Length: 154
Image (cartoon, rainbow, N blue to C red; front, side, top):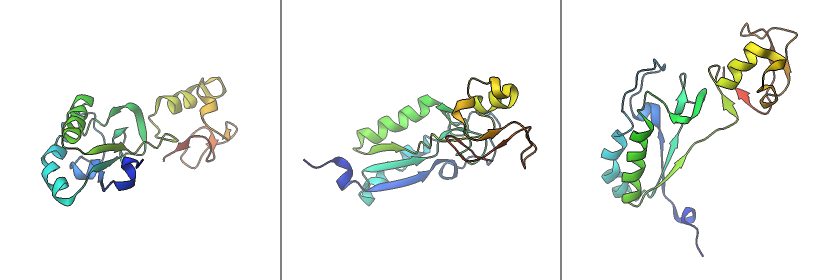
């Protein structure tokens, strides 16, 4: 039996750029992601049957400095907007794949903010590897860190 991915023709969308989102997240919610719906006829003309969205989770700037993996970036709209996009793509026979890089977080991620505040007492300290609270980082933080379980995108 053939798996759908074996015959998939993907179109990759860097959501923040494709949708014309501002470089920095200013917390304003603007429904830009629905722009993708207008492109469905073009995708079909190209023979595209799968869209690879990356990145689209709530972030501070470039998308891989994730703040919240449960919400799409405010610069793209609300979760309901993305749900409508997925529904329209699925109705057109186009699969949806999300770029979820779950070992990357940004400085505004709840676990990292808690680590900065509570250090060794942080309930998230085991989410990060090679944390050293005895020094300062190159970025001026009150601890250092090496690449490990979760990578901090500076």
